[in-house]
Length: 337
Image 1 (spheres, rainbow, N blue to C red):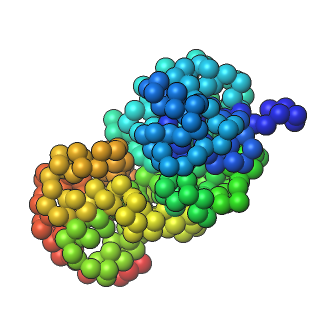
Image 2 (tube, one colour):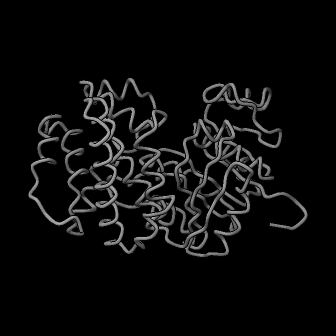
Image 3 (tube, rainbow, N blue to C red):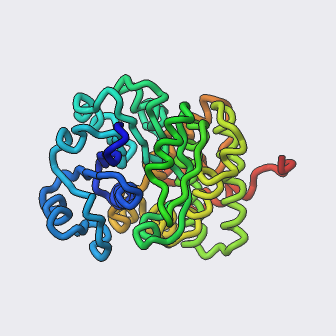
């Protein structure tokens, strides 16, 4: 990246979180090109500076444009920002990889675990592209897209094994309403982001069943405990899980009606089937997609994750709502730590 021009960012794709991060980057001074599959989306963004599929009421900065051509989006990009469902990452990235520049930093916004491999998003990126891990960044935190699009204050963690690269991207996404902090704990950031979605399903179910705030607080707290157990078993720092990409993201996702994972869980708690809740939510719900992979990862490392286990059983119709709740409440008594 030269000194005399703004950073150039390619954001793939134009969903709700991708659009929000594209706006953050543009507001922070980057030239941003968003890739969308549908020409009606790119045409509208270029002509009206609005994304008609997501947040049509929010005007996007003039330095943000769109294209249906991934090669055009990636041409000269300093940053490739990936915002697609975790289970679609491998195939999509394989198609885009030939267009990634030799110095492009790849930024992952994904909060899921690949089902067939148990790999985190950064690991999938390295596997598919061959890019060095010191060029892969993870952005994670309590970031509800609707609030960010409204300019409401938020913060996040920018994690990369190379601290200098983390600081570069920190500057690229630092605005008056979005405050990023840096970290080198990529494992902790990714596992905090993935596991909190499963815990949010549980708190949503409790909400839908009318179980009260004590139950929600219990699930959030014990959900954090099992997240820390898994993350530290895989090499993360416990303090990361007490930060924005751990506790912060967990609280926002478990308590906000803007959270699609909590909303999905609420549908289940009110009696919908998984299929009915999927139709009602209409967007990818990463907790549903990743619960089984997270549980498999935990079992492979001999880590107890009772909430994740109960949610996985419920999603795969191996337990009813009542059985899942009983399984959690009837566990043997033990010390908290």
